[in-house]
Image 1 (tube, helix red, strand yellow):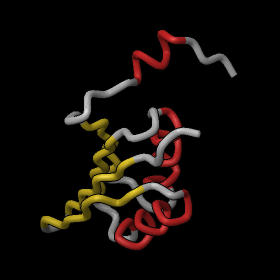
Image 2 (cartoon, one colour; image 1 turned 30 degrees about the vertical axis):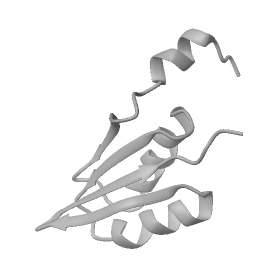
Image 3 (cartoon, helix red, strand yellow; image 1 turned 90 degrees about the vertical axis):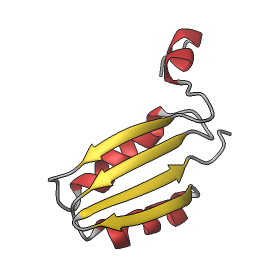
Image 4 (cartoon, rainbow, N blue to C red; image 1 turned 180 degrees about the horizontal axis):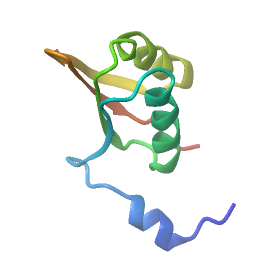
Length: 92
């Protein structure tokens, strides 16, 4: 797997910035599959905001975080929109 300094710099986020995954309109298992891919591409400690409309994400995303060691910082629901903020576990 190629890992250059430019690739790492390109994906690095400032502490107060979020990467965003828009999974609205997708249904199980797609939101979690996309989440897995997105988290893998982020540096450790990054914040990721996930937007979803599938009610099963209320169960699946917290379990995903526990299983893989990421921190679920926030989980909110506004009508049919589910929003999650996840902090990726440190690299290494």
